[in-house]
Image (tube, rainbow, N blue to C red; front, top):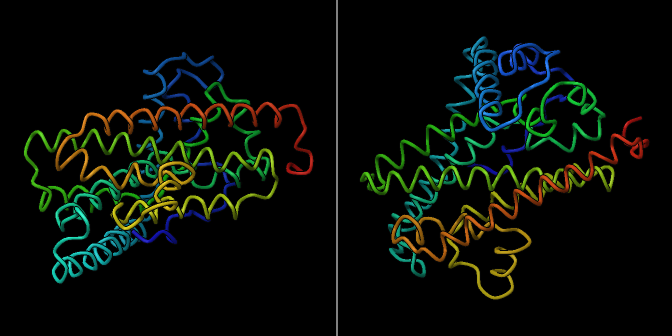
Length: 298
Protein backbone atom coordinates (compact mmCIF):
# COMPACT_ATOMS: atom_id res chain seq x y z
CA UNK A 1 0.00 0.00 0.00
CA UNK A 2 2.03 2.96 -1.26
CA UNK A 3 1.53 5.98 0.97
CA UNK A 4 2.09 8.32 -1.96
CA UNK A 5 -0.92 6.83 -3.71
CA UNK A 6 -3.22 7.50 -0.79
CA UNK A 7 -3.98 11.21 -1.30
CA UNK A 8 -6.79 11.82 -3.74
CA UNK A 9 -5.99 14.88 -5.81
CA UNK A 10 -9.33 15.02 -7.61
CA UNK A 11 -11.21 18.27 -8.14
CA UNK A 12 -13.44 18.70 -5.12
CA UNK A 13 -15.40 21.54 -6.67
CA UNK A 14 -17.53 19.20 -8.74
CA UNK A 15 -20.66 18.02 -7.02
CA UNK A 16 -20.47 14.32 -6.21
CA UNK A 17 -22.62 12.05 -8.31
CA UNK A 18 -25.97 11.34 -6.76
CA UNK A 19 -25.87 13.90 -3.94
CA UNK A 20 -29.53 14.76 -4.25
CA UNK A 21 -30.56 11.12 -4.75
CA UNK A 22 -28.59 9.95 -1.74
CA UNK A 23 -29.98 12.69 0.46
CA UNK A 24 -33.52 11.92 -0.63
CA UNK A 25 -33.04 8.21 -0.24
CA UNK A 26 -31.91 8.62 3.34
CA UNK A 27 -34.34 11.29 4.51
CA UNK A 28 -37.45 11.24 2.35
CA UNK A 29 -37.00 14.43 0.34
CA UNK A 30 -34.14 16.88 0.08
CA UNK A 31 -36.25 19.71 1.51
CA UNK A 32 -37.56 17.60 4.36
CA UNK A 33 -35.62 17.86 7.65
CA UNK A 34 -33.54 14.73 8.09
CA UNK A 35 -34.21 12.48 11.03
CA UNK A 36 -31.29 12.43 13.40
CA UNK A 37 -29.84 9.21 14.68
CA UNK A 38 -27.56 6.33 13.90
CA UNK A 39 -30.09 4.60 11.65
CA UNK A 40 -30.46 7.66 9.41
CA UNK A 41 -26.68 8.11 9.25
CA UNK A 42 -26.19 4.49 8.26
CA UNK A 43 -28.82 4.87 5.55
CA UNK A 44 -26.97 7.90 4.19
CA UNK A 45 -23.64 6.06 4.18
CA UNK A 46 -25.18 3.05 2.43
CA UNK A 47 -26.95 5.23 -0.14
CA UNK A 48 -23.76 7.07 -1.04
CA UNK A 49 -21.71 3.87 -1.15
CA UNK A 50 -24.17 2.39 -3.63
CA UNK A 51 -24.39 5.50 -5.81
CA UNK A 52 -20.64 6.18 -5.79
CA UNK A 53 -19.96 2.57 -6.74
CA UNK A 54 -22.53 2.74 -9.54
CA UNK A 55 -20.92 5.95 -10.83
CA UNK A 56 -17.45 4.36 -10.76
CA UNK A 57 -18.71 1.26 -12.58
CA UNK A 58 -19.90 3.41 -15.48
CA UNK A 59 -16.22 3.50 -16.44
CA UNK A 60 -15.65 -0.19 -15.88
CA UNK A 61 -12.18 -0.41 -17.39
CA UNK A 62 -10.91 2.49 -15.29
CA UNK A 63 -12.50 1.03 -12.16
CA UNK A 64 -10.96 -2.40 -12.69
CA UNK A 65 -7.53 -0.96 -13.51
CA UNK A 66 -7.48 1.19 -10.35
CA UNK A 67 -8.63 -1.66 -8.13
CA UNK A 68 -6.17 -4.12 -9.68
CA UNK A 69 -3.36 -1.54 -9.55
CA UNK A 70 -3.79 -1.01 -5.82
CA UNK A 71 -4.11 -4.76 -5.23
CA UNK A 72 -0.83 -5.30 -7.09
CA UNK A 73 0.86 -2.43 -5.24
CA UNK A 74 -0.09 -3.91 -1.87
CA UNK A 75 1.13 -7.30 -3.02
CA UNK A 76 4.56 -5.92 -3.90
CA UNK A 77 4.98 -4.44 -0.43
CA UNK A 78 3.91 -7.65 1.26
CA UNK A 79 6.27 -9.64 -0.99
CA UNK A 80 9.14 -7.45 0.26
CA UNK A 81 8.34 -8.33 3.87
CA UNK A 82 7.83 -11.99 2.98
CA UNK A 83 11.33 -12.14 1.49
CA UNK A 84 12.79 -10.26 4.45
CA UNK A 85 11.40 -12.77 6.95
CA UNK A 86 12.56 -15.65 4.77
CA UNK A 87 16.12 -14.49 5.43
CA UNK A 88 15.55 -13.15 8.97
CA UNK A 89 12.75 -15.21 10.58
CA UNK A 90 12.31 -12.96 13.63
CA UNK A 91 12.33 -9.16 14.00
CA UNK A 92 12.17 -8.42 17.69
CA UNK A 93 9.07 -10.32 18.77
CA UNK A 94 7.57 -10.19 15.26
CA UNK A 95 7.34 -13.13 12.89
CA UNK A 96 6.34 -13.27 9.24
CA UNK A 97 2.75 -14.17 10.13
CA UNK A 98 2.43 -10.99 12.19
CA UNK A 99 3.44 -8.77 9.26
CA UNK A 100 1.02 -10.62 6.99
CA UNK A 101 -1.80 -9.95 9.46
CA UNK A 102 -0.67 -6.32 9.83
CA UNK A 103 -1.00 -5.76 6.10
CA UNK A 104 -4.34 -7.55 6.03
CA UNK A 105 -5.73 -5.28 8.76
CA UNK A 106 -4.06 -2.13 7.44
CA UNK A 107 -5.14 -2.58 3.82
CA UNK A 108 -8.72 -3.54 4.67
CA UNK A 109 -9.25 -0.78 7.23
CA UNK A 110 -7.71 1.91 5.03
CA UNK A 111 -9.81 0.70 2.12
CA UNK A 112 -13.01 0.79 4.17
CA UNK A 113 -12.14 4.25 5.52
CA UNK A 114 -11.43 5.85 2.14
CA UNK A 115 -13.92 3.77 0.19
CA UNK A 116 -16.86 4.89 2.32
CA UNK A 117 -15.49 8.27 3.45
CA UNK A 118 -13.48 9.30 0.40
CA UNK A 119 -13.39 13.01 1.17
CA UNK A 120 -11.59 12.41 4.47
CA UNK A 121 -8.25 12.63 2.65
CA UNK A 122 -9.07 15.88 0.83
CA UNK A 123 -11.20 17.69 3.39
CA UNK A 124 -8.74 20.58 3.67
CA UNK A 125 -9.12 21.31 -0.05
CA UNK A 126 -12.90 21.38 0.33
CA UNK A 127 -12.60 23.82 3.24
CA UNK A 128 -10.10 26.07 1.47
CA UNK A 129 -12.16 26.09 -1.72
CA UNK A 130 -15.30 27.20 0.09
CA UNK A 131 -17.05 24.02 -1.01
CA UNK A 132 -18.56 23.37 2.40
CA UNK A 133 -21.20 25.96 1.47
CA UNK A 134 -23.02 23.33 -0.58
CA UNK A 135 -23.30 20.94 2.35
CA UNK A 136 -24.36 23.63 4.82
CA UNK A 137 -27.73 24.07 3.11
CA UNK A 138 -28.56 20.36 3.00
CA UNK A 139 -30.56 18.61 5.77
CA UNK A 140 -27.70 16.44 6.93
CA UNK A 141 -24.79 16.50 9.35
CA UNK A 142 -22.19 18.59 7.49
CA UNK A 143 -19.15 16.49 8.38
CA UNK A 144 -20.69 13.10 7.66
CA UNK A 145 -22.29 14.30 4.43
CA UNK A 146 -19.03 15.82 3.21
CA UNK A 147 -17.02 12.70 3.99
CA UNK A 148 -19.32 10.17 2.32
CA UNK A 149 -20.07 12.14 -0.83
CA UNK A 150 -16.96 10.81 -2.58
CA UNK A 151 -15.35 7.41 -2.90
CA UNK A 152 -11.76 6.41 -3.49
CA UNK A 153 -12.02 3.84 -6.27
CA UNK A 154 -8.63 2.27 -5.59
CA UNK A 155 -9.69 1.70 -1.97
CA UNK A 156 -11.60 -1.40 -3.03
CA UNK A 157 -8.32 -2.90 -4.20
CA UNK A 158 -7.05 -2.45 -0.64
CA UNK A 159 -10.19 -4.09 0.76
CA UNK A 160 -9.97 -7.06 -1.61
CA UNK A 161 -6.26 -7.50 -0.90
CA UNK A 162 -6.64 -7.36 2.87
CA UNK A 163 -9.52 -9.83 3.00
CA UNK A 164 -7.85 -12.28 0.63
CA UNK A 165 -4.54 -12.17 2.50
CA UNK A 166 -6.18 -12.75 5.87
CA UNK A 167 -8.29 -15.64 4.61
CA UNK A 168 -5.31 -17.24 2.85
CA UNK A 169 -2.49 -16.64 5.35
CA UNK A 170 -3.99 -15.22 8.55
CA UNK A 171 -5.17 -18.42 10.18
CA UNK A 172 -8.82 -17.47 9.79
CA UNK A 173 -10.48 -19.43 12.57
CA UNK A 174 -13.93 -18.16 13.62
CA UNK A 175 -12.46 -16.44 16.67
CA UNK A 176 -9.62 -14.77 14.76
CA UNK A 177 -11.99 -13.79 11.97
CA UNK A 178 -14.23 -12.03 14.49
CA UNK A 179 -11.23 -10.19 15.97
CA UNK A 180 -10.06 -9.30 12.45
CA UNK A 181 -13.42 -7.75 11.53
CA UNK A 182 -13.58 -5.87 14.83
CA UNK A 183 -10.00 -4.63 14.42
CA UNK A 184 -10.70 -3.45 10.86
CA UNK A 185 -13.73 -1.44 11.98
CA UNK A 186 -11.85 0.18 14.87
CA UNK A 187 -8.79 1.02 12.77
CA UNK A 188 -11.01 2.41 9.97
CA UNK A 189 -12.61 4.80 12.48
CA UNK A 190 -9.11 5.62 13.72
CA UNK A 191 -7.98 6.52 10.19
CA UNK A 192 -11.02 8.67 9.39
CA UNK A 193 -10.78 10.51 12.71
CA UNK A 194 -7.09 11.30 12.24
CA UNK A 195 -7.65 12.47 8.66
CA UNK A 196 -10.51 14.76 9.73
CA UNK A 197 -8.44 16.17 12.58
CA UNK A 198 -5.39 17.07 10.49
CA UNK A 199 -7.47 18.38 7.57
CA UNK A 200 -9.46 20.61 9.93
CA UNK A 201 -6.28 22.63 10.40
CA UNK A 202 -7.37 24.41 7.21
CA UNK A 203 -9.97 26.29 9.25
CA UNK A 204 -7.24 27.88 11.34
CA UNK A 205 -3.97 28.12 9.41
CA UNK A 206 -5.14 28.68 5.87
CA UNK A 207 -3.27 26.81 3.16
CA UNK A 208 -2.54 23.64 5.11
CA UNK A 209 -3.10 21.04 2.39
CA UNK A 210 0.58 20.16 2.15
CA UNK A 211 0.88 19.71 5.90
CA UNK A 212 -2.29 17.61 6.07
CA UNK A 213 -1.12 15.34 3.27
CA UNK A 214 2.26 14.84 4.94
CA UNK A 215 0.67 13.95 8.27
CA UNK A 216 -1.72 11.52 6.59
CA UNK A 217 1.04 9.79 4.65
CA UNK A 218 3.22 9.66 7.76
CA UNK A 219 0.51 7.85 9.72
CA UNK A 220 -0.08 5.27 6.98
CA UNK A 221 3.62 4.79 6.33
CA UNK A 222 4.66 4.15 9.93
CA UNK A 223 1.58 2.01 10.60
CA UNK A 224 2.88 -0.46 8.02
CA UNK A 225 6.06 -1.27 9.99
CA UNK A 226 6.50 -3.57 13.02
CA UNK A 227 6.53 -1.53 16.22
CA UNK A 228 9.70 -3.24 17.46
CA UNK A 229 11.72 -1.29 14.90
CA UNK A 230 11.14 1.92 16.84
CA UNK A 231 12.53 2.63 20.30
CA UNK A 232 12.92 5.57 22.66
CA UNK A 233 11.59 8.95 21.54
CA UNK A 234 10.43 7.60 18.18
CA UNK A 235 8.23 5.06 19.93
CA UNK A 236 6.71 7.77 22.13
CA UNK A 237 5.86 9.83 19.04
CA UNK A 238 4.20 6.81 17.41
CA UNK A 239 1.80 6.48 20.33
CA UNK A 240 1.09 10.22 20.71
CA UNK A 241 1.61 12.80 17.94
CA UNK A 242 1.52 10.32 15.04
CA UNK A 243 -0.39 7.45 16.67
CA UNK A 244 0.57 4.79 14.13
CA UNK A 245 1.76 2.51 16.91
CA UNK A 246 -1.79 1.68 17.92
CA UNK A 247 -2.49 0.37 14.42
CA UNK A 248 0.73 -1.56 13.91
CA UNK A 249 0.42 -3.26 17.32
CA UNK A 250 -2.89 -4.94 16.41
CA UNK A 251 -1.40 -8.16 14.92
CA UNK A 252 0.66 -8.99 18.02
CA UNK A 253 -1.58 -7.68 20.81
CA UNK A 254 -5.03 -8.47 19.40
CA UNK A 255 -4.84 -11.25 16.82
CA UNK A 256 -1.81 -13.33 17.85
CA UNK A 257 -2.59 -13.15 21.55
CA UNK A 258 -5.45 -11.03 22.80
CA UNK A 259 -4.31 -8.47 25.38
CA UNK A 260 -7.34 -6.84 27.06
CA UNK A 261 -5.23 -3.90 28.26
CA UNK A 262 -3.97 -3.01 24.80
CA UNK A 263 -7.38 -3.53 23.24
CA UNK A 264 -8.92 -1.17 25.81
CA UNK A 265 -6.19 1.38 25.04
CA UNK A 266 -6.86 1.03 21.29
CA UNK A 267 -10.59 1.61 21.76
CA UNK A 268 -9.96 4.54 24.12
CA UNK A 269 -7.46 6.15 21.72
CA UNK A 270 -9.93 5.76 18.85
CA UNK A 271 -12.74 7.36 20.86
CA UNK A 272 -10.52 10.25 21.99
CA UNK A 273 -9.35 10.82 18.41
CA UNK A 274 -12.92 10.70 17.07
CA UNK A 275 -14.20 13.15 19.70
CA UNK A 276 -11.24 15.48 19.11
CA UNK A 277 -11.75 15.37 15.33
CA UNK A 278 -15.44 16.19 15.67
CA UNK A 279 -14.78 18.99 18.19
CA UNK A 280 -12.06 20.64 16.10
CA UNK A 281 -14.13 20.38 12.92
CA UNK A 282 -17.20 21.89 14.63
CA UNK A 283 -15.06 24.67 16.09
CA UNK A 284 -13.65 25.45 12.66
CA UNK A 285 -17.08 25.20 11.06
CA UNK A 286 -18.40 27.92 13.39
CA UNK A 287 -15.60 30.21 12.22
CA UNK A 288 -16.35 29.26 8.63
CA UNK A 289 -20.06 30.06 9.00
CA UNK A 290 -19.33 33.35 10.74
CA UNK A 291 -17.35 34.56 7.74
CA UNK A 292 -14.02 34.77 9.54
CA UNK A 293 -12.37 32.73 6.79
CA UNK A 294 -12.66 35.51 4.21
CA UNK A 295 -9.17 34.94 2.83
CA UNK A 296 -9.84 31.23 2.50
CA UNK A 297 -13.21 31.54 0.78
CA UNK A 298 -12.31 34.25 -1.75
